[in-house]
Image (cartoon, rainbow, N blue to C red):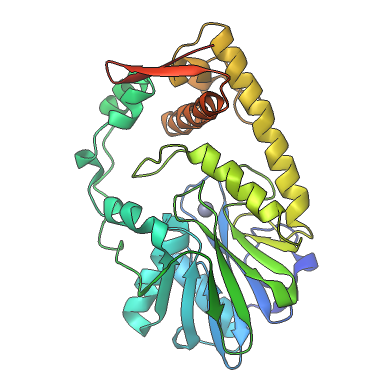
Length: 344
Ligand SMILES: [Zn+2]
């Protein structure tokens, strides 16, 4: 097997291309594989820090991913034992789980935002025990039927959802040996999502909070949050209010400006809010019905043309938009027989 050579970020033909790409002094982007996932790959970042490594995110616990990460840090002259700490942006499987499996062998430290604690506990609970109340409350009974009739996947191995060594609470300074980062809580995509800023080097590791090509899913969590989109928009504005930096996202290539992308995301959500409002004005009364009147993906697909998992994401996202419209006083809502209903 050939070894990876360290290349410049600009040399990547495609952001998912395996390898190790220098994005700033002593900072390297390492794309890792995902199983059958629309996101295609997840970036982890290696910060070389006085003879050791700090990692931002860890990848999805998979043999192929671990092997690729090993080759990448090998190209930098390090082994897994040199990773002092994984700073994980959020609890989703593609970011968190490999930190746990590598820690078992090498004893590295793992840090995660305190806001992820409930989701981490829930993630270790078999899905069957969690039920369908969430889907029921957004009026998605047809989706519940679809899921009930689907071939059940084998029970998820839940043993990788171990606790981190350290919970990061609130905005915190994270001291490395030769530099320091600031962890900034950015709830929205998940309740405990963090971005990590390196002000001295004008970088932000944005995790899934700010992504270059897509908008992160909102409102889809093991433990539902009351107003995830309001949280998300607040977190976008928080980041917009700080000095601009380069953007190092978890999915997609590095970009020059966090602000430029945040502006696009804010505009996108304004547009989706308008579409959601129009759907209720046209007669939709639940999030499920409203999602059925809105186009999905860049190709404006119909809800029912999405696969069941993406239908579910679309309905939760619509629910999140409708609840922001209620917060803004543009719609009213009430819960009737366990289902949220909206009117203009
Ligand atoms: Zn992700």
